[in-house]
Picture 1: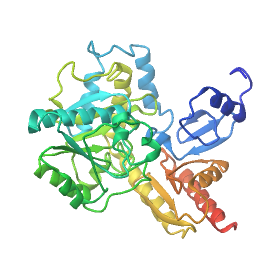
Picture 2 (picture 1 turned 90 degrees about the horizontal axis):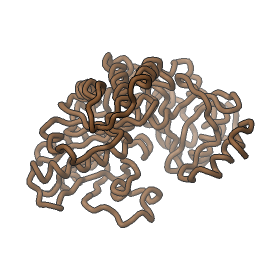
Picture 3 (picture 1 turned 30 degrees about the horizontal axis):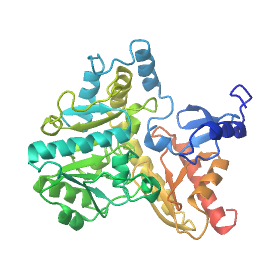
Picture 4 (picture 1 turned 45 degrees about the vertical axis):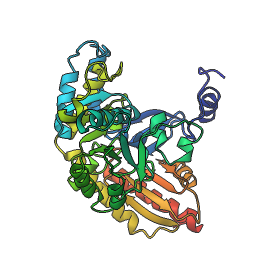
Amino acid sequence: MTIDQAMTTERAIEFEHEHCAHNYHPLPVVISEAEGAWVTDVEGRRYLDMLSAYSAINFGHGHPSLIAAAEAQLHRVTLTSRAFHNDQLGEFCAALSRLARHEAVLPMNSGAEAVETALKLSRKWGYQKKGVAAGQAEIIVCAGNFHGRTTTIISFSDDPVARDDYGPYTPGFVEVPYGDIDALAEAITENTVAFLVEPIQGEAGVVLPPAGFLKAARALCAERNVLFVADEIQAGLGRAGATFACDLVDVQPDIRILGKALGGGILPVSAVTADWAVLGVIQPGEHGSTFGGNPLAAAVGIAVCALLETGEIQERSQRLGQHVLETLRTADLPGVKEIRGSGLWWAIELDGTGSTGREISLELLGRGILAKDTHTWTIRFAPPLVVTEPDLDQALRTIIDVLTERNTGTTP
């Protein structure tokens, strides 16, 4: 088979399977076009995107202002490396600093790269500012975490699928139960430099912490001279119903990690934000990336920050998200253990007695809805924040119908 043949779903999947590493298990749909909250497959079928590339497409596919920013920059200069200055980087860092309420920004590319940057930054701060003995820095993480798939990051994962057979593992991490403030307090020692936490755990299935936990953890870290590091790669930039999920509980981290939607669904862009007291420990030559802070990424990042400055997108996410939770929770869905979420980000956890999350996702696919399972019994949903209310309501009706039919064998 060659790429020149008429492309059907089956042919495209076969071609990919033959030549692409099998590190994902995608649903059997081959997307060729997209606009707003909708995508179209190679055979012309349309689907409502209810996953948004795991929150990378918060502003929808092909948002006009983001595309315009990228197109304009494409015709000027796309890459200089940080060996030289470029005329977009300063403005991007200033805009993101304002948004994040931090003094400085370290731009990178992928989310995992930003997490690695935050880990290095925390350790260097610990040695230079806190006085931790060389090689003894510890970082506390949470059970059920997902921060990426690099060797260091999977070293503190408790997911065997992500972790097994990749050792030896990087030391220096201590795990505590997510949401357990007493366990966190007990785990902190004189060698603790940071507490790394997702304000809402994404890969685990949109798991929210207990009320008061983030606030208490923030206060504990301040008291014990430990950096509070918030991974907002999935939860941030409007997804959870605020600019950042930490804003929902009035918590300002020492270090904020951003990615995914920061690139506007156009290219990989990530960043670490902090005040100079923390970020200033990194000096020239001590950390970097060829593509980090490139002019194209910075131009798109500026446009992303502009979309979030008024707060309208965040308010809309919060309002529609509340409507989603009320609609699903009052539907009395069979076979459902829990419905949880924040903003336009929610999960349906099944009780394990009926169809699996993948089976439900496949049924939704057949009815024009794109969603994805995680950990067998959970389905995650994250539509673009620009989804229309009629489209969202139609999707909710379809979700309710599928869960009712699959778990009772009846048609509503």
